[in-house]
Image (cartoon, rainbow, N blue to C red; front, side, top):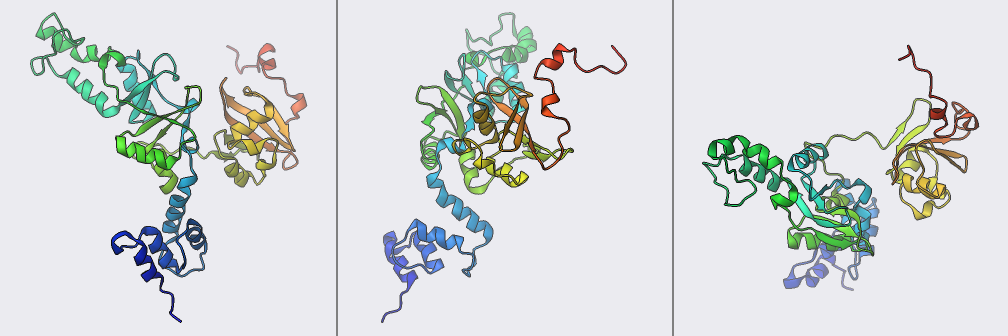
Length: 352
């Protein structure tokens, strides 16, 4: 009986006698038969197999294999978190947005995000400002250009930089196109499309043509290698923080699984949790509307108090588990939202 040689079999399947990546992985883990995704996933999950693959490499391979199930909607930045600029925004204000947001690209829209016009790249923006700051005797603007100064070169030299910053994005003409994709598109397909078109930003459009979110190459790559931070990324505070009174202050964007592990309570079993992914989504589903700041929702012995919110979404939530610790005060004794303001608010120390 001939002994099975996985490497020799793997060598037959590749084009030109060269084994494919899947075949090499099969051979490495000693798998026979046809190459299948399940075989490789099972082998990667089996840590008892002796091989020279590190845990980090295993994690990367698992993420690569899992990417085929990821859709654009899973990686996109939601509409509420998009930092953008309108066509009529002055370049001075765009400069401030770039500074505060720390992004290299900004989507540009008409009156609203549902009227996208393209994006502005920080390199194009800086190049434009540099050209605008160049004295006219070095670079003369074209006749009729918005940057042209009729008063002469001396006056133009003094006003050139300020005049450039006073212009709007529509006048600067430095926009680049973006891709428009549906949330249901496979993330891997979008990655390939972005590489082919050399476009790093895409806007996610819903069935009615409205802007649903934003996805970049970095968002997709982070699904494989984890969060990528550069020198300008400031370390964010933990999404789940233990408060001094034993409760938890949680970023509403935190995944329910993260919150579950942090507070040791299964939030996925509450109400309509199966239909949402984040804590903010759960609180909104339980309330039946976007809850206002100070609103309290109690479900299955767990109290959710909205600490921060705007009319569109919940931002931060305080979680209190009944029975774990005594409440600072009874909810029934607390004034309703807005009631404190009617009563004149708490007394001020030292008067006015």
